[in-house]
Amino acid sequence: MNKTTSKIIQLSITIALVGFSVYFAVNNINFSKLWGYIQSVNYWFYLLVIPIVIVSHYLRAMRWKILINPIHKNTKTFNLFSAIMIGYGINNVIPRGGEFVRPYVIAKREGVPIASLLGTVVLERFFDVLNLLFFISIATLLFTEKLRIALPSVSSTQMIVYAGIPTIVLLGLIIIFAFTSFGHKAISILIKPLPTTLGEKILSLLTSFTEGLSIVKQPSSFLPIILQSIGIWVLYVLPIYVLFFAFNLHHQLFLTDAIILLIITSVGVAIAPTPGTVGVYHLFMQEAMYRLYSIPLEEGLAFATLSHSVHYLLSFLLGGLFMLRENISPKETIAHPIENSL
Image (cartoon, rainbow, N blue to C red):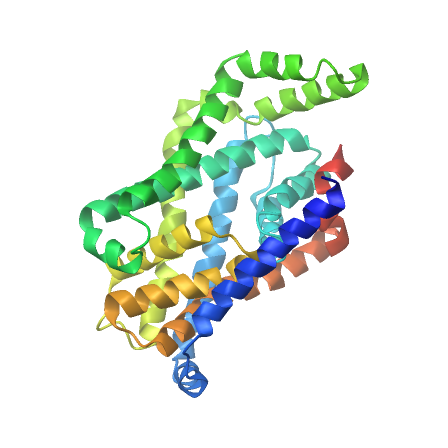
């Protein structure tokens, strides 16, 4: 399969996911009622969500700085925040594309090997899925019935498996490459048929990637990383909770309900990632609010739309502004950033 065919297939799948999820989200919706709910929102609470979201992204930059510290001690947190926002902006166009773009931004600005930065991104993903696994496990114990009602086709066990498999896979890769020589030996055998120059380049990149995992050999850093990871999730829950007040739902829905809704939408987005989580997020949020709390579909969709719009619009706005700061064009960020930096 050539590169063009692969891209066409990926694009087709993405469009299909967005199309189906948007269709099911708006199916049987009374749009005049939907507009009425959007108009009735207290937008002061909506505005209050904006700084919470920005702080959550900045806390992510602080955590990334700890992961990068063993390979580059003088990385500025604001530069990392800049790269993260650019990455989120790219995620609005290409699902997961920002994971490759932000290492490129930092490599270009600070001269850190991009392969090493990719190693830190793998560690970030590990802590994120570990967090998701932790919260799903707690929710399974405390809110089993609610999860069953909200996700009838996905059992609690399946949710734990969905989060657990990536956790185990990432942990295995981290252990193999950070603590043993098995990974390097296996790759060395696999690349033997390749030209010598190319093989040496791959091994060099692999060495840099392994250096990016160095933080796992510093147990003293684990506690701040874990606390910051929990803090990031708390700051993801708070916007949902604050929007309960914007929709005058705070008498019916509480902080625990915000946690449940975050878990459900996170599972949905993990199962079917779309650009900027468009459609999938709306469908899962809307259905969960209807099934669990008997909130009208129109109000649930209005809530999902405003909840999603804060993250989506901020990503585009701040991502675009930081692209100007980094002197990077959208075309440059999308057109193979890893290849451009080698």
